[in-house]
Length: 151
Image (cartoon, rainbow, N blue to C red; front, side, top):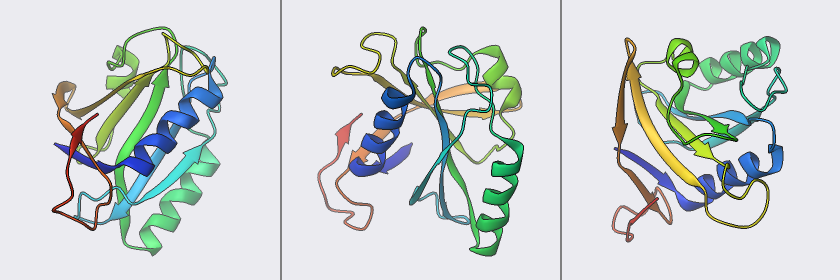
């Protein structure tokens, strides 16, 4: 199960809408071993494509060095789909190289960058096997008693 605060979820959705019609991508880092998505890092889609995303290799290397220095890891790896449902494509599955990460997909197919709901779904992808997981959105990660809502 992915537990994410509403501000981070909303920022991921805003990024996906802003980059539409191209796919958006990014990482939410958190303390190693914590499973806490705390620091959103919007990344450049180096492919600049409506059907494919690719992290810029230099930007990704810089981010990983930063995470290592701060004892962080990628807790969430996200990207958007602009014309299809929020489900990993074969390419997405092949690129999934962080077995401990939550892979979040946002589909902007229905409303694009206009107001309106999006699909926001999370998956675990390990050795090519895709498992959808529940998403619980909380006002704050620091208040475990706060009411949760489904994404």
